Image (cartoon, rainbow, N blue to C red; front, side, top):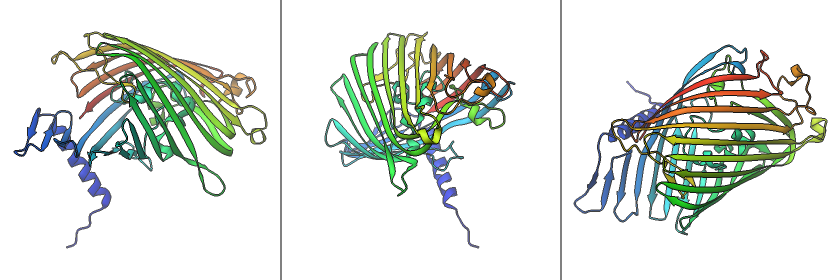
Length: 438
């Protein structure tokens, strides 16, 4: 009897085996060296194998995030409470070095089963021209401080709603690209990249390109104190009649997971023709267990006057402010390579680290060529509406150890010049997350 094995089944089996290997590696600690003293195996925080001359290495790791949301009011279509639980991320990551100057990263999210492409990253980098690194392949653009921080270690469960105003500036789904990045000394980090735009082609089938740049200046970087500043810029050219709308989950992912009653407000839109650009600024200060940070974003896109039937462009802006305090006394770690905050390492292995925080988000679509959704219910048009939203988020994070993190967030939002189908212009949500990192 001939047995047939599908490629998908083989890949699933490999992924499961690799995941089990990496998770089981968490149970061991320390370093193992061969008799020849040329190979080192590390099993703390994943599985890493490297030669002592640092010419070759590979590391297997990943993350598992299980979320649950309960939400009502504007977050739903009919105003009644809805709930949703889902696998937010089940990511397997493989990275390493080859021949000293070359490195690679592969990251696949097995939770995105409904998408056509769930490779978060697949890139090759050349590091021989220090301090410059050149990467090609599927790469995550970085626009903004929260976007620079890994989803494993962001303070809130979901990132700020300001990124919904120009989601393309951080979208790895736009396709492959090339990125240059450099870290100079202990204070400067910068990166610039060009990325192919998926779905934005001219009549000859040529893709337009998105360019994203970020620069960071951190004059103070100490274990218990950090001062951080950053500037961001992104631009793209869009073809005549390109259809664009600004929608936001307002930091509650469950509104998109719930296909029955979840609501994502449309704050405006336009047919575009020409240049679409975004500016951003960021700042943060940390001292001991206390930290404060904020970001500002502004977008302007050229409207297609013929297709829209008016001369309105698409303009939007937003900002956020966040304060956090670690009750158990630990400081957030920081990396100038990438210009970002990183994990909190619990000092007490029995109670872990406990963090509380508050974040305020404010987004506004200042001008639009297409009226916001349901604006007609309020008697508004594209010329009179200025849709906005304000969201308050408070929460608690428990870092049980360096692998396990449990988060609880409460969100309250209110909107102007836009309502859901039930006429609601405010809403509440509770979000939960259990995370395991290896």
